[in-house]
Length: 547
Image (cartoon, rainbow, N blue to C red):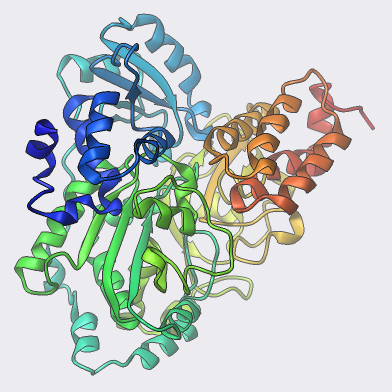
């Protein structure tokens, strides 16, 4: 208890430290300081927060980045290497890299783990040495980072407040607060521009504002910066380049719904950005733009499911990130049971720019009758992976040739994932489909967060599908049986010498119909895509009958 009070503050003098919403931050503080969570410390934390030990233990064991050590267990080694196991990193040799690192590591000093996507798919394979990301990693580069003690994130060069102001930054926020721009006028601009949620759901931004404003206050604003969809890294790029552009859009959104506070939930795989946002928020407080504690930054703890908005809110409240049954929706009863506006990072990033450039400018972008711009996170077998800002409605073939420098040398397009792990897989014969919201559903896919992973004739499609199902099985929160059992069962079916199509199709229907949230509903998409569009390839692996 004395250790906790030294680390967290004296809860007897400041009762706010006991609030359940602080639990995950407290767990991070103990994990960061001690390297793991021992049961004695968890028992002390339960007394400190006046919570049952069961609540502390359930939350700590839910998240992948917390190491709970029982009384009869040895603590983990001082250093952990996390080797990304996402499709993009696997294509770049992550499996062999993991095996080589595990073989050469002293288990008493280093543990080597497979880990889900780290949001650096454009520089695959990636290994986290402590909190330091080694990009385009090999054994030598990882070894050098270990020898040099590089375990903290690399410094990020970002646009400071003064420079953002010189470029016209925070003009919209000032105009909003002074009554020069009204909520209705700005909402009409966003409606005309066609701005939609860019985290995956694509819900019109102005309608979210209307829904939350229609509910009685107090209200809250939450930013979903838990960018965990494999293949997605656009939010990281925007936050690294112009955090104040994002913060202005978030503050304008909070103003639009008259929010009591603005919470930012940042994935723990972006430790460097935690420092950037902390400093940027401090600049705003020092400049008088916001009051202290109006913008509250929270760390995730390694749980893909927290990208779902109600699971994210559960996590913000200091609980395991399990999706809520709806209705009520979070716009009605969200954070702390109050109406809550939840937006993605990129969505709010566009608000000041659309106002400055004009709704017509944004709406006029697009191809094939589509409207707006899309930030495509492109990785895999292309010459120039990265975040490419392109017109909505562009085709994959155009995206590769015009923005990605063509296919990687020696590779021929075979397939692509248009929306990350959950968006399905399309064949090269469908590379001319417009990429946008509502254009892919008839093909059994969706664009989601526009995470495009390109596969070639040198890639093993069944192995890709098995990798994705393994990811979903590992990341399922376990709350509902169709997802918890269904993902594991489907993975087991994929690992057989031959696929049982009828059972796979039936299981996919049950998961889609009965799972509580999108994880279980979308998990079968990669398998269904292969059964629909890649029958000859599956037959060549003798997984299904020819003909």
